[in-house]
Image (cartoon, rainbow, N blue to C red; front, side, top):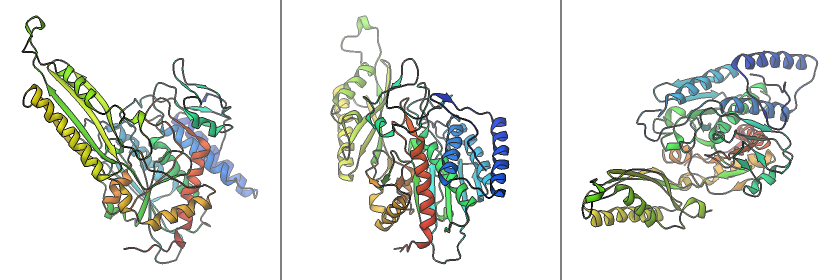
Amino acid sequence: MCYIALQKYGKGDLLMKSKNTRLIYWIMSCVLAAALVLCGSCHSYAADVKTAVLERFLEYVTHDTQSDVNSDTAPSTDKQLEFAKLLYQECIAIGLSDVELNEEFGIVTATLPSNTGKTGVPVLGLLAHMDTSYEFTGRDVVPRVWDNYDGGVIKLNEEIELSPDEFPDLKNYIGQTIITASGDTLLGADDKAGIAVILTAMEYLLQHPEIPRGKIRIAFTPDEEIGRGTENFDVEAFGADFAFTVDGGALGELQFENFYATRASFEITGKSVHPGHAKGIMINAALIAAEIASAFPPGEIPAKTEGYEGFFHLTGIEGDIEKSKMSYLIRCFDKEELDARKKFVEDLADSFNEKYGENTVKLDLADQYSNMKEQVDPQIIEFAKSAFSAAGVEPVIIPIRGGTDGARLSYMGLPCPNIFTGAHNLHGPYEFIPLESMEKSVQVVISLCGRLPEFDFKTN
């Protein structure tokens, strides 16, 4: 599929296109591309990539694909499956092979075949997830494109603004194109930017067969945000020797360490009686929930930790006198620390049962994913570093303060570090992504694929 910049975009202009309009743009783009080839001209690498990844991203974020932590289905929401069908059709349209949609689980896979006769070339996997966070609404996303950012405040709406005083990373992108939502929703760059990057890179390589490459396998999975993105993923059928998730943050990030992750759910049962006659009888579940929350260490929360520091994250609290529920995320980088944090939560529940009576507090602990560091061969990281450098990107090695599908895949036999998309401030209305960072991510993926035939990958 050809994408050509046929529309100017200015500061704050909305780039919303109907499907019919996109079809017209596609036809006009192909005609223009053919004309340029016939006249002996060609697009610049940057123009092709930049326009294509922008067009894809702006369309993808308008599709609501929020996952549901309370659902037992796979995928957890039907709207993810609808988006998977769109991606399935796009994979076919750009010319990928072996395109499959597993409608039972909502997983899309496809192949970019090798174009080199060289033997022993490893198979590279590239993955991104379709769902957006359950922590903030992803419905009716209106993307806004801010051309030539001037370093000032970006007003998303009457109440929400992006200020470099609060978000100093903005200062790194003066003069660049910033993409945001409208302030009423998250943007969805996590991880629709990754999907746009992968498909743009695959399209570019198909259009440039002079670039030698090995076999590339791609996959788009659901429910990463709720820790279930790879539950039904068939690593053996995928057939890659190693892979990368394209699900990272700022420009240059290359990550192969992530949190150990556990979810803690409290269910509190109270006793409701008339408040005028409640002395010595009433047990207020809502007050117990507040008491439990106050018992957690106040300095060990996301807003007060960074780097390799772990935390407890209260993600939800609801209820009344009779019943209350609380949800926590437990995160850290060390297994022994995780065990200690889980014991702290178990002891906390026990102490409240001693205080208010047996079975007042029920605790459920569910492990979500582990730190991939022990599963990723250093030669894969060195290969990635060389591809970054070849694309003109300085690798920034930092831990993932979160998790990706790659964390679980690494423990399922598919080593899977993570590379950047360029996104910032994920899971909320302040989310933004510089277009130029997405463009660089595409170039890194192309570099990974192009250097694959020369990678002497030694399996254990």
